[in-house]
Image (cartoon, rainbow, N blue to C red; front, side, top):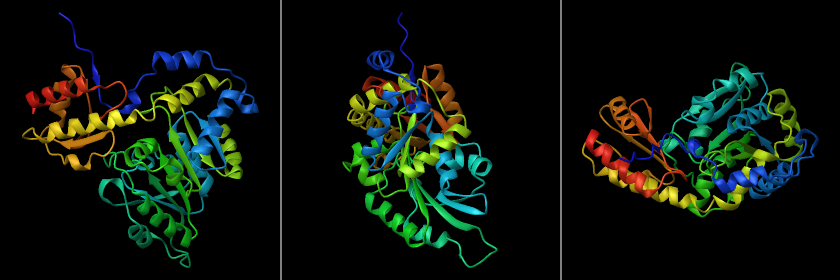
Length: 342
């Protein structure tokens, strides 16, 4: 009897490089990236800078390092405060790096779907004349929102937040881990979202299917300074073109197909909404992240795991993330299992 292949909806970080991507990586022209001699890394950095409407970019091992270097670029350990959604990645998944590495204080803002608005930011800012308070310094936006359910920040709302930041002399950073999901879902170009920020980045190891890497973009001066922190934090590499080639392949072949992941996520959400005991509003599923509630998440995850299906839970909420290794048949199988278990 044949055994069904596992279904991994734990995260889009679980996506695997395709055979064609591996071939491109194996054939990559390489050199010492620290000396600027790796042509594949250089090509990737130039491409991402242009894609995001910035002057320069820096290839880094992870998106977390992009965020942490950006925090260090924009703040100083002198009581500086950073404004971001309380469920965003630097708050919940970077091991307190903002405090440890940048010495910055994080101010978590509320907002539905992982998005705060301009009024909430304005209300949270400190009085610059009050020496008792932290210094308002940086605002961060996460596009798409992770624990917010893959929601897409509308461009108008981003522009309103950036207008507040500029009016008060704050710097701005875009966590674009899934920015290209937002681009495909909305039809708004990456540069339209990213060029208004002082720094922005995209990830290659999620829905784009590369095994490793992200690129931080900004002005030439800031990226030159970011190189220093890349060295300091242990992110400098040598013949990194091998992994940069995977990222270039992803940009060439795996962006438009993100629409398939979005369609699979919406099919999953619609199916879940029809199951008694599952709480979800399918209208909130805009990209590839599906978050829902059930009476006993622990029991559900255990039951699914026994059937070779992997999801994740955050408290009372269950999360499923579609990606290029999950097809429509896997969604149907997941729905059938959840019907049996809930």
